[in-house]
Image (cartoon, rainbow, N blue to C red; front, side, top):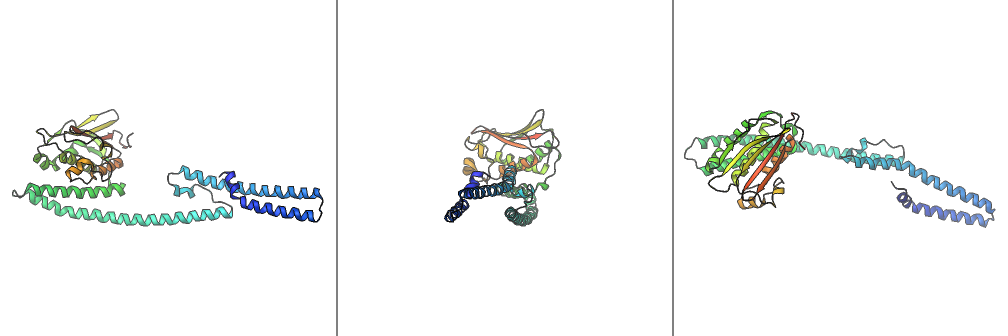
Length: 338
């Protein structure tokens, strides 16, 4: 709170007081009061007004400076009332009460929205689990029926993948309690992902090469499986149709971290798209050409990695290769890596 701005805010009061002072002086002269007395009265009036102005300023400056400085320090400005003392003066008390009422109203509104969001999330998760039962039944029936077309199987698998996307999107956005960190055998997760995509890999004649993955990492196995499945799906979707299509999966072991590498020799990602591939609903030129991309897979994968304390990054040269890196800390407390 600057004194210059405070003074300018009081300029109209100052002009009124100066006008009154001028009238009083004229009256005193009209009654032929001694000039020395007039000077004394003038000094008293001026000093009194200055003192009142200064006292009012210093009374308010502590409250407002405290309010502003605490707001600037806080990441969540609405918590400022917890950081300042209850004021003693009427004007500041009014401001404090108004802020308190606003804060209370906001908290009640947020609480209501959170309840609604939790209810919606629970419904979506329940619906997904319910719909996965008939989907699993259809998959089993198709696998037992030799006359079933590969096209039907592929369509059903895509439907399963999209259902999983919805499920993990809801979980990643709204509920940290949905995952459980424990020591996980990385090779088992990678094997599970390979089996899930076996039909597509065989049908598209893609070599699924896994080496040096016998490591244990601290993660949630289901979430990690979903993340890897999104990456493998992209590798299958954007293959180059050559005679030697492959997906190589291996681990680079460093002192403080393990880096899981998923590499393919597909069509790659244009350099102008690479920085945006983790953005929500971003499909890029490849996605538009294929016309099958939602732009959500890598976005959800990035969110899940962030929740789990892993890093995910991507490197690619168009027409040559794409490499996705998932970095795990060797610290069992799974701190977010720097």
